Length: 152
Length: 152
Image (cartoon, rainbow over all chains, first blue to last red):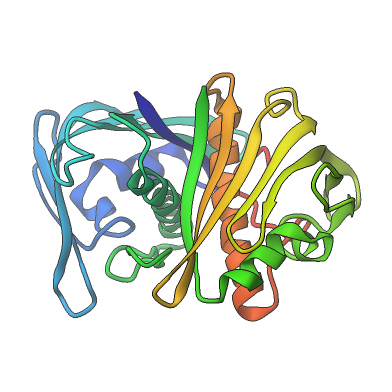
């Protein structure tokens, strides 16, 4: 199995970072504006990615598998791009010095394909958006996300 | 073996991107200002990372293993952080629409550790610096690189 992993530090208490990862409102401020569903354990959250004109680029549904306040969030992708279905998204938080450190994982890809490389880069950009949102109140969720290549 | 892979598009001809990856002058404009050595195949390039005050944060030596104009650059890390020694850095370029697409790889890590997650995120940030340099003439090489966590 193949994992994308990233490490980022956010200058904010872990409670604030956790809120951005575990609530519909938080998620809408850094990943995609178009998010809805049930944010509790066992709930399903639907994320839709659009162009600025409103056309749908992609959609995925995550089932919330784990929520440990201020330390862990885990989702399983149950609908979305073929390569994503069955993969897990994990966020492990810890407070270190003046930062909340996130170990991010998009885990259990069946294989490393070109789309994996795209998603790895794109996740990095969204984690920077998450940091910006938590530190300043304003992130860059889709459709205002930074485009990284000719795919998105 | 564990690989970090990223995909990024740069709005510039592949010749320009290749130059930024295969010459000492190019590398100094997006990865670290402190770079020296022999950029030819079989040559060794030394990259030093410093704080803004000039203290050394890290140093690595890459042996140039492959140079195919406008398509491939490959280095082997022969000195540096323990986890890096023996790993390979690869850049595969292709022209698609108005962009040069890079498939970047930092390949053959012995295992996925927290430092791998840090490096994955940090590589993403340096690839954005590379894009900025090629597209605008000004990147963010160390020591003016974007800090991503409490490690660097």
